[in-house]
Amino acid sequence: MRGLTAGYVVRRVLMFFLTVWLGTTIIFIIPRLAPGDPVAAMVSRMINQSGYIENSAELIEAWRKKFGLDAPMYIQYARYLWNMLRFDMGYSLSQFPQPVIATLRRGLPWTIGLLSIAVILSFLFGNTTGALLGWRKTPAWLKRILPLSLSFTSIPFFMLGIILIYVFAFGLRWFPFSKGYSDSVPGLNWQFIIDVIYHGTLPALAIVLTSMGGWALGMRGMMISIDSEDFLILAQAKGLPMRRIFMWYAVRNAVLPQFTALALSLGGIVGGSILVEYIFAYPGIGYVFYQGIVNLDYTVIQGVAFLLIMATSTTVLIIDLIYPLIDPRITYQKK
Image 1 (cartoon, one colour):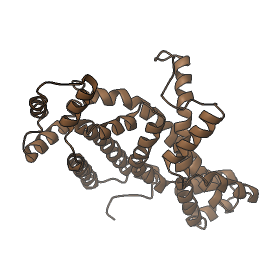
Image 2: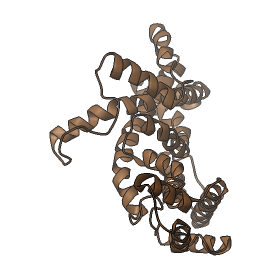
Image 3: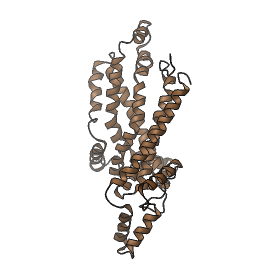
Image 4: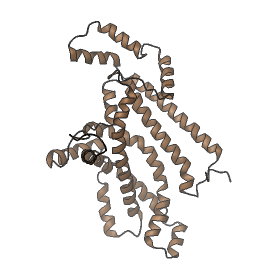
């Protein structure tokens, strides 16, 4: 690949594995620092549902042995690393005998659908807004209107979600306030697709409106920094159309750091969407993660967090490796 060296690729791959190892270690430690015993909590919920369970102490001890929670911490950690290496996330503590991978497989398509659309729209709208704000040829009336689109930036995802529910679900009754779909039959049919889009509009809007401001401000700063570059002056001297100069000379060079920021922000966006999915009872990974935290379900928490770490680390690695293809000026070869 042009501009890359074998040494750089090896270093980035090693950094990728180091990042994944550190992340998986942290998500092993943090749930175990929380007070309470997940098995005792599970048995307590069973008692609340059935009224009485005979030999509950023996049952708790048997379940702790079943999930390996009776072993010393270093043995649990070794087993955990080996299982993560094989992508074996075990069984859910709160929904046994359901495997964690089955829980993730059920919620993952919903989160991918919601976040992919929300991130793409936020990235496009935010960077377009920032590029127009930083471009000196933008009409004055447009520069006065565009900042209004950034007024939601300081509002948290979940807070805007509550406002949208109050206004558009309970007030105007234009959209539903919960779930991913209503009574349509799941499948690749237009009725179900339209139903999913209808239910996902408010959650996606909450993410887009609150995150596009960051893209706009970053893009505006980059556009201002390259405004007086020689290649822009040369393009104008050649008499190229202003639209072409804006898109292929200014925006193309200013947007490069935004791609790195996009990869790094994926984990943050997913983390913020947890509360959004909870507020809207949206059946995605965020809602699964919230239920895992509430139920002290170590395996579900570890599975979701490991999935997020892998997704973010892989995206950053890919972007680092394709940078020389996006911008020929970037090279990792020694001069």
